[in-house]
Image (tube, rainbow, N blue to C red; front, side):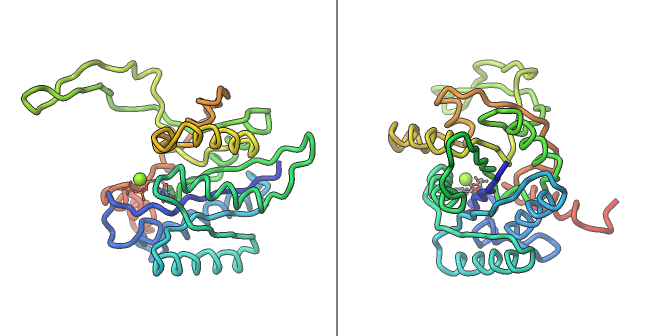
Length: 256
Ligand code: CTP
Ligand code: MG
């Protein structure tokens, strides 16, 4: 299936506090998170897991950072012979995805009747996703799913909590862990269906759109079943400095 990968890389990385937008933060090998993420897409393409049409990358609007990340995209495109288009992002992740979807549509061209285009929406903050995860998502789409997400089991006990009058918190319940999944990216979609789902979320106003922490949520709200496929522990998201340490340890050839 003709597939365009949409990498969202426009976040500021406020929890990582690297002093630069997160996609520009370097891992121990000196390569940026965006470069690692692009290389994982190229590896999936080379392995045959995805039939890659092009990559759209959504970048922060901060000028210096955008220029540096555009350079990363250009170098990657030239080196791998893959078409890469970059566009500026928005305030929330969902705004960035919507900006990226317009670029994906332009890269995909018109969809002929009966033809399906797939889009894989992927966080730049997940630099180490193995090809098997891309493969599993594409297999689900190939079998007819309009949406497919990689997920792993939750290992912690998850409780709900609410504030108390004294300013503390108390537990209000415990969720059934056997039903919980930690969802990763790339998330795969039928392109036309995801465009329509995002338009629907946008009609619900800024609060509705801001509440979308992933794209499957927009599809769920539009009534589409979302297939769950095996994720991988290596699909973890770099959110805090501890995550960066883990990624660096995994990349360090001398670590056991
Ligand atoms: N993202 C984006 N545009 C935004 C916010 C997030 O493209 N306005 C992207 C990030 O670049 C990241 C992915 O969405 O690749 C997941 O978001 P998250 O891990 O929350 O990254 P940040 O928003 O950058 O980090 P933080 O929330 O700590 O500021
Ligand atoms: Mg964020």
